[in-house]
Length: 79
Image (cartoon, rainbow, N blue to C red):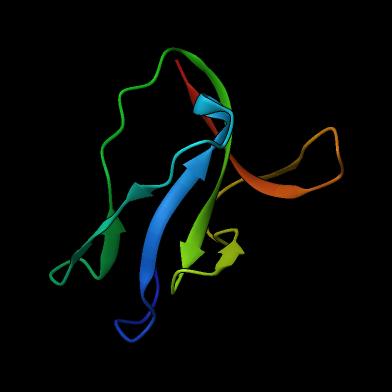
């Protein structure tokens, strides 16, 4: 997730575990990106970032999809 260093991106959550757990990201000051490595099975997954412990947001830099409830999320496809 690309953002300013002042914005604290705490976690990522997604439908890979039915939105049950928030996984913490680490800030890379060299690339200016928040990063995480997750091991996922092949498939299509929806996810969101949690900003400053409360606001759930999509990244404008990643593909966006709408789930069956009409909620906007980011989407990633794992081959």
